[in-house]
Amino acid sequence: MSISARMGRVRSQLRISIRRHWRCHGSQRSSPSLALSRLAALIAVGGAGPSYSAETDAAVSAGATAEEIVEMLVGVVSVVGLPSIVAAAPRLAMALGYDVDEALEHQSDW
Image (tube, rainbow, N blue to C red; front, side):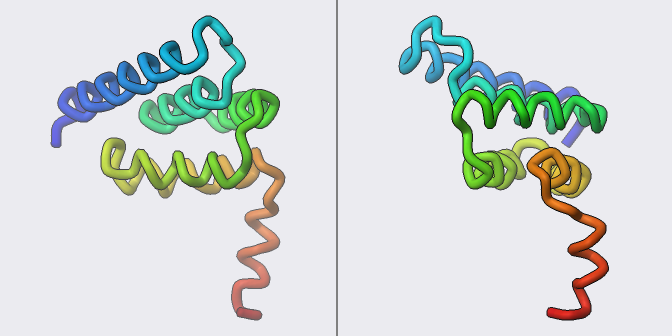
């Protein structure tokens, strides 16, 4: 799938998310659904590491849970592609306070 086709699908998904948000929450801007949509957009464009931290903090502050963030990550894989998810997962994990390096060190203990 070409990049322009992928971006078209992402834009379409974002429009749907935004419509649902406005239908459910009106002008309330700090809702978890809007914050999760922003994270999904960040994943789609391959945002920088510090952006993940800022947007994840905003999502948690808006009421999103770590489980909802992981669900969003899994939910957008068919739109953004597995390489984008693989790149985003450790950044989101670190933003949520998960020590990725320590987990990899102890991976042999499993």
